[in-house]
Length: 253
Length: 223
Image 1 (tube, one colour):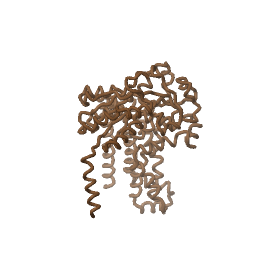
Image 2 (spheres, each protein chain N blue to C red; image 1 turned 180 degrees about the vertical axis):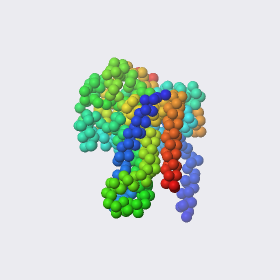
Image 3 (cartoon, chains in turn green, cyan; image 1 turned 180 degrees about the horizontal axis):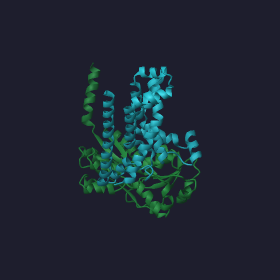
Image 4 (cartoon, rainbow over the protein chains, first blue to last red; image 1 turned 120 degrees about the horizontal axis):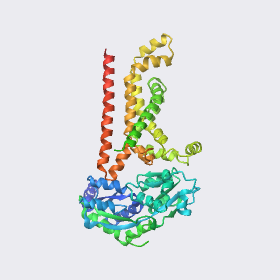
């Protein structure tokens, strides 16, 4: 009986000490941010709930009052748009990383991605998976790279669009698409690393994927949200991001 | 206004409900009249899409149709492409996804037919097939219409499965529901609203028609 009382007391006492924030993040951060968040949870005792999706979708949700505290976009345009509508705190906006795109093909595929963009013109390529350029920053970058190398028109009919960069990766990882242009951070993820090979698309071929994070104005946990953002900027957080192939914000590649 | 996307949705709905009419009638007949003791297992399988999230169906479809399974390899060998990202792929996935919406109303209507009439028909020497087309089907018409229209409407409103296996190809797999989603994400609320409104009005009209037909069928049967 007494043990039960202690357990109940312990349970009741917990929420007072530990708070929770909800973080909406672009899906290229699926692995890196999960790692950072779990370190943050361990060190501070607070909890972080993560929601991943395409930046456009998450921004639309925030615009319509989604209960997120922090938004990690895969670009800076969506945070800026929300800023213009006064839905996020301007002073909290900061660049946390620069993303990169890679060509990716599954292990055992006849397509050699080390040939670079020419690999996309290989006759064995039936479908090319990219994220939707209309609302996913990585899709936008992929389309820009195809245009830069003047092969967009030649491969246009073979493009299939993932709803976000993770889905584009699923399309090519499952073998339904033969090659994909995905985020380096996903190619380096533990579950993807041994499944295929990648080739980094030169960063001069597409506008830099400057990725910004921002605190949502409606957040009721601004202190904790600030603490989490500060944690991401600490050397350990930045090191995790780098390990997943992000370069430091503003840093020349 | 994205007319091609709306047209694609309607085309998908018509084809899928037509296939389900052909495939669903025998399945429903068997469900209504079979006395096999393990029948309930197959009934549960057909009802699965009612409870499973579309993501489950979409994910399995994606994995099963990929070149790593014998099925996927066979399809690839014959058609030189994989099933996802194609209109045929959407039709295949939608047939599974809307199956209970056709089969369950069909089966319920068949089960409601007076057994005495069937026995009388058999006594008079009619084959089961003749009995089906002359007695069972006419008496079950309201259920058959309901099942067909529901499967059409359900396919029209399908989103999750198409998002999972479609690849968002304009004119091929970008249905109205996907187009609305894209417009919302790109902050084009006006465009999203237009397509959504047309879909809303169209769906309402179709469903009103079904209920009107059902009412008249009910009146006929009451007479």
